[in-house]
Amino acid sequence: MSAEESTSMDVRALTAPCGLDCFNCPCYMANGSEEIRKQIMSAAQVSHEDAACRGCRNEGGIAPIRHAYGHGPCRVYRCVSQKGIESCATCPDFPCDNLQPYADRAMVLPHNTKVFNLALIRKIGLEKWAHEKAKQVRDAYFNHKFDI
Image (cartoon, rainbow, N blue to C red; front, side):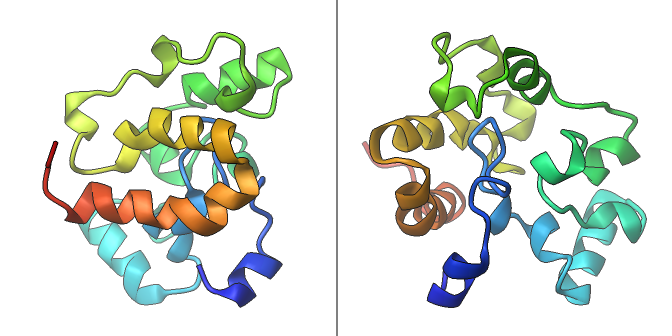
């Protein structure tokens, strides 16, 4: 994230309650790039409108791409809203089954990074995570090889 982006971006609004970094998501980036939007439209077979997202919180927990497939708000968004808390990182029940990773999301979307991101948010804080770690986690997830 550039210095200009970090000062103009509302990190809280663009971090999903589950720990996903909306500000690094191609669907969020599609708002400013017709090329990215067209790639999403083609890959996901969704409309021009459904290929871009303003971030989970700004969409009321229903990302347009979820809506295009007939889904309502995700379980995490509903749970955090009902509990009146900021995110799973501040929940006494963290981690819970709402954060369970699933095989069908393993390489397509960074959903399996949620618990790791939330643990980092708890440890170093939202702002520091957003500015120093979020992109690194996403890049490692999609580009690095498994090495333990």
